[in-house]
Image 1 (tube, rainbow, N blue to C red):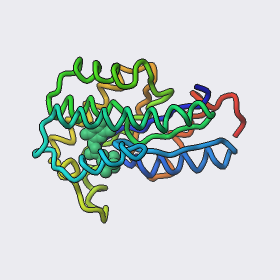
Image 2 (image 1 turned 45 degrees about the vertical axis):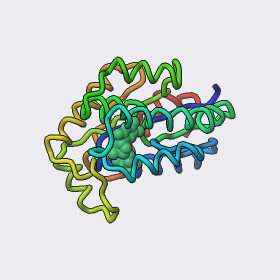
Image 3 (image 1 turned 180 degrees about the vertical axis):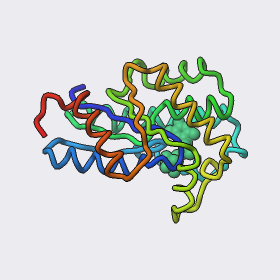
Image 4 (image 1 turned 90 degrees about the horizontal axis):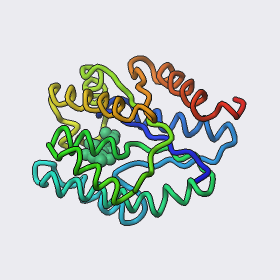
Length: 212
Ligand code: TYD
């Protein structure tokens, strides 16, 4: 695979989708081939599974069933989109990847870590992101950001502060476990301020050979 796979992780309201778009635009402006994607999602099957997941409340779905659907969508996403794009030299920027399963299905819904990692191995093998950017901010800030969104919130968006704190510490833990590919970025402050922190890391880790 010749391209680079960059993943954004973090709880609801940390600003992932904004930063995914800013980074995609910046890399395109630099003349690179860029694709923006998200999980759960992917090609036709992955997006259908996303619909099932997004239209069912977590309380209606058994945690193991939820995890299996997440990895079915991920397998489709990997085989049909991510791998072909990387083989074609693209910078693929993805909003969430399997660390989200470790936090939402693992930490929040008690699916054992080893079971999630076994499924990871079965579905995507040894594949890992080249860089995982973990956006981290105080839960009060992310809750305040969520309240300004116009979207209809899903059950995870409506989590109370203690759950946001659990998600936040879950991602700090995955960043520690997978420290070889993870960087924690302070997501407090303006979009541009956060973006400049991200760009610095992308430059150091992935673009050091390409001039800005
Ligand atoms: P989305 O609307 O894309 O939310 P966000 O903007 O917060 O990323 O919905 C994704 C939801 O799916 C989010 O609540 C986290 C959850 N999720 C899991 O539970 N497990 C996973 O493996 C992934 C990728 C997402």
